[in-house]
Amino acid sequence: MFTTSVIIATYNRADFLINCLLSLIHQSQLPDEIIISDDGSTDDMLDAIRKILPQIPVKLKFVQQENNGFRLAKVRNNGVRASRGDYLVFVDQDLIFTKNFIKTFVENRKENQFCVSYPVRLSATQSDLLDQSIIGQFGFYKFLKKFQREKIKKQYRKEYIYYILKKLRLRETGPKLRGGAAAINRSDYFKVNGYDEKYQGWGNEDDDMGKRLYRAGVIGKNPFYREFPLHLYHPPHHENGERINNPYYKNRVKEIRAGDFRSKYGIENPLDENKFEVTELN
Image 1 (cartoon, one colour):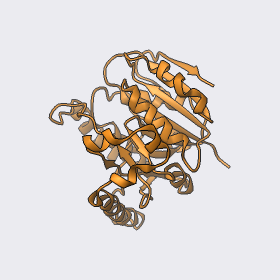
Image 2 (cartoon, helix red, strand yellow):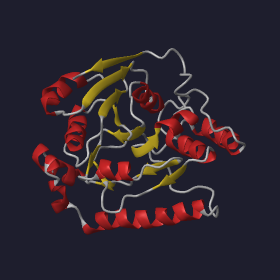
Image 3 (cartoon, rainbow, N blue to C red):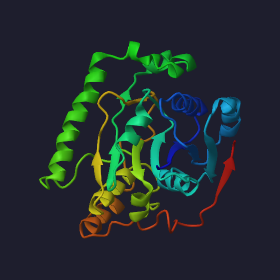
Image 4 (cartoon, rainbow, N blue to C red):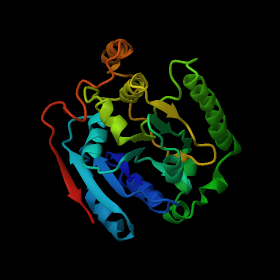
C-alpha cells in the first residue's frame, strides 16, 4: 500500500481553487491528503477555504510563502515539504477533473515512472457555464465540443507512441512533463532534488524538471484516454510568451545532458531563506 498527496499550486483566484477542491472531493478515489501551496496570495484564500471545509473528507493543509513574485518551483517544493504521501499528484488551481482522474494516476503508478495528463481547454463561455452542482456531478460533458474530446484521444495516441519509442531506446524522451497535472513518486522527486528554485518568473521549470527526471531514468507516461483535466479559462499570466528564465534553462540543458540531473536549489537545499507557514485545517 502507498499513500497519495495532491498538491495544488495557487495564487489568488479563490473561486478557481474552490472549484478545484470540489472536483477533487467528488473523485471516485480520494487522495490521503490535499496540500494547498500558495505563492503569497493577496486575496484571503483561507477564508474561502474554510467556507467549504466541512465538505472536505481528507486531511487538508494550507502552505503559504511570502509574496515575492512568481515562484512556482518553490511553491511546488513547499507543497512536497508539507506532504507525507508516497505518490505526489501535482495540479494547478485552474483545473477541474473527470470522475476517475485521481484513480487513473494511482492505477498507473510504477517505479521509475511519472505520469502526465493533457487538459481540455475550456472557452470563456464554457467556463462561465460551470457551477458547483455541475462540477460535483461531473455534468460538464454536455457542453464539451467533439473536437475537445478528440484532442485528448489524439494526444494520448501520440504520447503512447513516444512512450514506447523511449522504452525501446529509439527516442531520447517520452511525453513531456506538464506539472499542472502530473504525478511523481516521492522517491523520484527527491532523487532529482525536486523543482529547481532558481526558476523565478514565468516559464521553463517544468521542462527542466522533465529533462532531469528522464536523465535520472524516470520515464513519463500519459495514461489518460477517457479521463482528463479541464482548464478553466483565464487570460495568460505572461506577456507574448516571454520566458525570462531562458538563458539559465539553456545552460542547464547542457549540464543535464552531461549527467547533472539534480536541481541546483531544490527540495533539499532551498534557494534563499525558505520562509513558509503551514496551517493544518482539519
